[in-house]
Amino acid sequence: MRHQWTAFTVALGFTLTGHLRNRLAMSMIAFFIPTWIYLVRGTALDKDITFSSTLGIEITATMNRAIQVSSALHAVTVIAGFMMFMATFSARDIDLRLVLAGYPRLQLLAARFVALLVVTVLLTCYTTGLLWMSWPLTQPGTVAAAVAAAILAYGGLGVMTGYLLRGELEGFFVVVMATLIDVGMQSPVSNPAGDQAWLGVLPLYGPAQAALAASFTHASALTCAARALPWFAATSLLAVLIFCLRTRHYGRSVTTPSPATPHPRADSRRTRHGTV
Image (cartoon, rainbow, N blue to C red; front, side, top):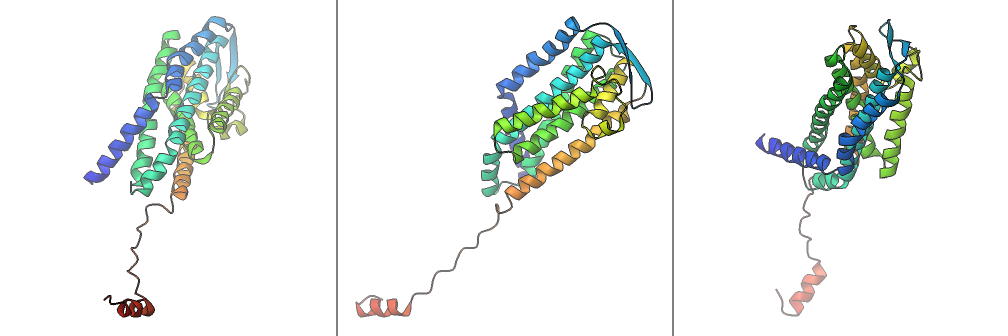
């Protein structure tokens, strides 16, 4: 048990260190999220808009603030997906060698997803705080839950693509395009009829609906935010399966072959030449 805990803590430490060394991701967190939110605040119109919600209510808010919520969700999902993809992709070959050397798979995978939880907590607090400084959110706790659910959904996607795809450009393209399409469909400005049934299959449907409702109303939206968790569970399960399939021939015990029995002719030749 102690060996397993040590293996997990070592793997978690290296995973978190890899995230901190990702300078592009750290720069995006420090500058891209606040810039994107406050750029919208300074340029978008303060015109009131009314849009439908899956909670069965009509929400009225300024276009400026509604776009800020959508922009914040877009920023954190891109960053979370990119961070988890790069951390998984860059360490993929090392993970395979570690498993080949006998390192337990479970500890490597657990460290990957615990690191995602740490990233989720930090990004959620940071992003919710930025939105709160822009204007007083009606339900900041529910907004934070929605942001966290969105990060988990796309963080799981990043881990899955990190094990599945073969190139960095492919992974970055998948993450960017998925978030771009998803946020575009969930934005109340580009799609005011946000209660359309088919939108429910998208990862950001629940978090976007919950974040918008909690930002401007007192409606209960926690269960709506949780609709992204099945996406997180599905992508995480696929990531585990892909990793196990890639390492299915690794870590097996190798039987040492028994010494070969000398050939009778070789024995007779050694005896003939005076060797025993």
